[in-house]
Amino acid sequence: MGQGDAEGTAPAPAQAELAQTFAGWRTKAFEAGRCPVRDVLDRTGDKWSILILTALAGGPHRFSAILRLIPDLSKRMLTQTLRDLERDGYIARTVYPTKPPSVEYRLTDLGGTLMEPLAALVRWAERSHAEIAAARVRFDGG
Image (cartoon, rainbow, N blue to C red; front, top):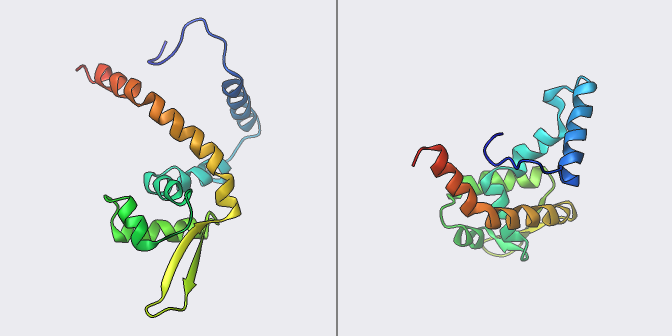
């Protein structure tokens, strides 16, 4: 048994679904480079994207407001991540014709569809963080 494995328990429906999906990919000689999961998670799985999307869940924000909400995020990384999220269709950028121009970012309909699974992941992370930290300590021999 690996760390975190439960003995004598039947797989949960989601676990069985994922195992079946993965087995199906393998029988189809699935090309890793064309994996939709890998392609989507490359963007949504990085820490800045998740934090920015979570910040935008409450409504549109300007660039400077996002920086204040996520204080350890640099301007350069925020700029790049916003561009990537806009490119993938998760957020929209609106420029208002003011002096100087004002730019606001908001979730798109596609970005909105990500909120339910993202909320589930955030709930799981909050609920499991202490257990994960304890497992790291045990693994590291501390």
